[in-house]
Amino acid sequence: MVRALSRRCSIQSWGSFRIRRANHDDHNNDHDDDHDDDDHKQQQQLRTIDARNTNKPMEDQPPFIGEAPKEKPQSDMDQMKERFAKLLLGEDMSGGGKGVSSALALSNAVTNLAASIFGEQGKLAPMAPERKARWRKEMDWLLSVTDHIVEFVPSQQKSKDGTNMEIMVTKQRKDLLVNIPGLRKLDTLLIDTLDNFGQEQEFWYVSKNDDPENESSRREGKWWHPKVKVPPNGLSETSRRWLLSEKEAVSQVLKAAMAINASVLSEIEVPESYIDSLPKNGRSSLGDSIYKSITVEYFDPAYFLSSMDLSTEHKVLDLKNRIEASIIIWKRKMHHKEGKSSWGSAVSIEKRELFEERVETILHLLKYRFPGLPQSSLDISKIQDNKDIGHAILESYSRIIESLAFSILSRIEDVLHADSLAQSSSSNSDDDATRLSSAETPTLLDFMGWGIDPLKRSSIDMENLFKVDSDKKASKPPVSPTPRPPIPELSDI
Image (cartoon, rainbow, N blue to C red; front, side):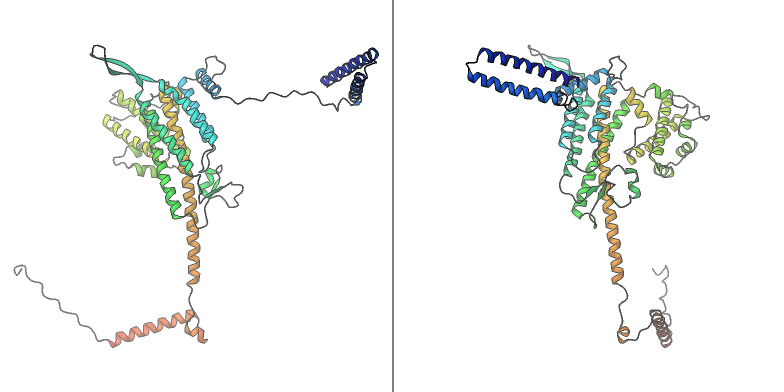
């Protein structure tokens, strides 16, 4: 309002100044008629503006609002500077040096990027071009660090005089040189798999609010995902086979990513903070019931898992944490070559090795039976305390590929499950129709009007059958048994 008032006063003073100047020019230049006409027109215009501004209420005058400058989109260089600034600062933007290590900052950057890109991938559909381009661009930035993680390797060099010399040259670290291209290939395969679902498919998705049917028990834990729909008779044979082939391909990607992730985690040292939190012996970690099941003479891992309560994800994760803790305890005891354990009974090293093999087998089965399981306490401790940047990149990259593969595999299984439900309902309806069409047809007696009750008719038929059978038995002469030939003696043979 103050700005509008100042503007009106300036317009009034400027108009008065122009009016006085116009009157002065009229007095000095009366002989110039054209100039008088122009000044008269300007005077009339200024008076009109002055009267309009004077008579207009203050609240009706629009305030002077300057246009805010539009924010320009960040260039790739600016985005890259921002990403690497967070990495160098250890996610501590105050610069006080209280941030996390470079390895953990890089691991968190890869994890957060994957969450922002694949977090909304709740259906089998191609990724948006913008998200796909952002994923590839920013992953290239983060993976570029691995190009500078090198090690010294011996190499041969020929000097000017022709003699061969052995020198040390730098080369990308072996684990990165092998696994980074493999992970990139797995990443590309998963994105291509999603792109394959861009064609016309026989299934579609509906939101849960638009679906009048109740959710099945299988979908109770996936309420945030849209529900898949298939035709009433199910998928065609061609579409079903194609889905099964895609499922097999994604399963292979999942196994490869899990193998790389497990290998990297095994190379990371166990933090001392995790070791300090462990109990003194493996029996305390496992519990009496689990310990007795593992230390029996004849052990079957499949039977052991079937006897355990694995109904919820929390129970599976708790069993995994117990088993991993017992493995660490037994390995440390074997490393220190203790003759007796603190369990209260003499346990040889051979038995400890046997028990360790058994729990490792159980752990292996748990990982492959529940691939989407959250990280265990041991894995979290290793990731947080890890200082090796190469291990951090390999672990985080393989983990997000494993998570994406499991998500795609679950979506494919949802489609196949909906197809099996549609097929079962279709077969049930066909059976009902066949049962109705195969009802008892009318006989000649029905057409002749001799309506006999079906129960009476069946009883009459049974009586006639028994009567005929008894007559046949009475008419037949008794049959004498046929004499068997004598068994020859052993001497005759």
